[in-house]
Length: 363
Image (cartoon, rainbow, N blue to C red):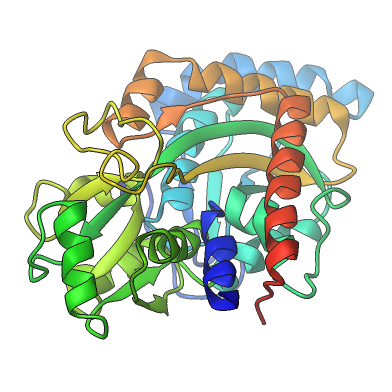
């Protein structure tokens, strides 16, 4: 009973896209200038952004010129995962509107908490931002005994970016074409199933734990350092089950390399309308999703936060960006800083209560 309670609590938590980059990374290094991808403006785009540059220069007299150099966006997951794709998709648009290059700095590991920790100690000058997810930002503080950051003290919210469902996918070798058949196979083969995730305590991990608890089945968890490596493990046959971010799995759903059984949200996804929900497939009430958001270090000037929020909201309202996210099964969802603060606190309080009641902690 205690174990079932532990799994149920572990699970419901919802944590934590591949696009062409405009410049390749240099030699591997921990410096932001070396290994991240950079979205640079083409000559025509630079001319087009001249007005934005002149507007920034006009602020120099007040000491508030921004931005006057490239902006680094830290991502706590590997390239091609959902958080990473969200950062790259938005970053490409922001490079145009801000008139500066956007550098994507991937720092994968520990369920995304390495990236969050790095951003918490960055200079609050507007030139280091964080693209994070509800996993490392709203859920991890309750899962880990201690973290080197405080989600309410160390960050300044800019805007929500997207909301996304997960999709239950299996390796083609799994003899199941529906959730019902999958559960039957799991019960007949209790030691053969292993599921990957982007890391311990991430939404994909907890989605799997919730499924195990509600279905009364057994699966072994295999954590990876990001959603893309977790999907690669599934396609390569190292694992046979994955609760994947839709953004990560979308390019593979039609390839035959993985088989989709259902989405994890309460309602069907417009991206795959024929794919049923897990809830309607027998596990009534199953509902897991993930969001991505852009933040800055605490004490970043309010004028900079306002400028970034304005540009992010405007970018997410453009038809082309909405369509690009929609093609990957994601919904562009901007917000005010205050609305994002409220979302983070709501998620934190919701899952903190569940985790505390179950006595769950991760090392």
